[in-house]
Image (cartoon, rainbow over all chains, first blue to last red):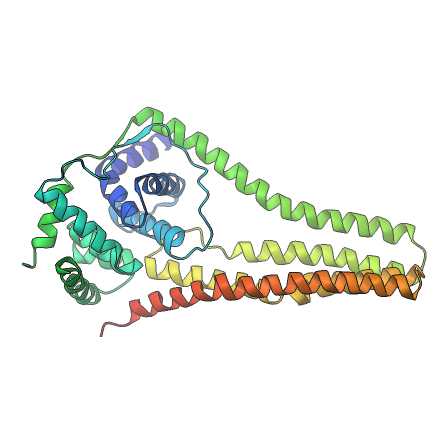
Length: 166
Length: 195
């Protein structure tokens, strides 16, 4: 049983780790902050996995935990987060300030900055959209209808376009 | 900007692997960190109970040794106060939502409920945290026949201290909890409106 949980955890992490990190980045002030948040998400994924029921897709479950942790820690808490978790076995490449950014990198940096200007929930919705998560799954993550998600995404995209142009 | 251009910008740059981990080391790491984390949370919860238990123990012992009736009533009230503090602090913790796997909207609704409980706990600090030990200590000192001057000084000192604690909590409610609850309300409302 424990072996099964370990395998599920490692496989799920393998396919979602970079996505989880990108979500953490959008709620963090810098790379170090994102690393701390990422480790907090990881420990909570590991802690919650035994109670995972196959009622939903495991990826949906991962996004829920990630976004709930990010929102609670970065949007709805006035306390400075204390980081007690230090996972030495994780290495994260530093993404900040590529020395000579090419056009793609410049656009990506600009897009990331604009995403950070959005409201907390809008940020998560657009990130899942940009990661090409189907509307149905996004709706399950947030507890909304697919129609509602579609309307939201349309509105957030138009906000992002305006921010990108300015 | 074309509709799928945002997606393309994102996808082009996010192909690279940023996070790496060693499978076996990560599991060992997670298990030990989780143990440490749980121990730390338990210790934090224990500290609150220990503080309440000390009040119960000291007041209980005092009620046994002091013979004056008013002092005894004051000390018995102190014992009840210790239980009340433990109950209030542990009760609010029970409402802290720790199921992060809930849909975001449901989690935020639960988190809001928890914040409202914490806010009310601070807002009503006068009734459960300040007034009972105030009455208890006044009764105790009256029973000890400390004399009107000393009693007045004590009452003024305790009253001053409690007024400070009261306003400190009120300001915490206003500066921390109310803006957070308002922000949460806006986000939750956002889930409900499509137009």
